[in-house]
Amino acid sequence: LKAATYRGPLYESARDFIVKPLLANTEKYDGGRIVAADTSIWEEHQPDKKHFAFSTAMAIIGLREFAEVAERAGDEPARTRALADAALLQKGFDAAFIRGGSLRGTLEPGIKNDIDGALLPIINFGIARDPKVIRDTVDRMRLLEVASGGYRRVRGTYTDPKIFEYWYEQEEFLFVDFQLAELLRRLGREGEADAMLQRIVGKS
Image (cartoon, rainbow, N blue to C red; front, top):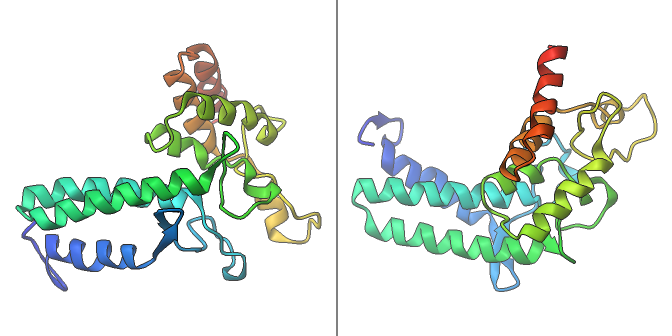
């Protein structure tokens, strides 16, 4: 944590140039906070930026992890604030992305992200814990199943094969397969999880 970086010791760099800018890019939502609309990690174009559940979930995880780092560094004020900010983001997450008993990929409604493979790691990381919400998410994954038996990330909305996103959104995403296999195992459905992994290994 004391290692030198461009802007000073590693710990202070993380606190001042990662955590603070992250928090500056959040906004109020229903008594909590969520990460502001962005393009996330999904190669979205800036005009299509949205409030992604994944962005807020990863911010929660990051702040919780940083709180442990702050404790090691002896920075109790930063630890306390990180946990408080994580709690606000959790409250905002629950209000923004769990609607009608279903976990949603974006705050903005739409068929594309209504069910989203990126919801699986959110569950696996423990951000969404309601058993009913988890079962509903797993059940709705059938909407993303492709002919191979694997899963894509979203329901594509492009219809013209000349548009890159048309192909991109139809493809199987192995990270979705792996995350679903992990979740199925957590739910005690080891046979289905094993079959998923065996199919991947066999094809590879």
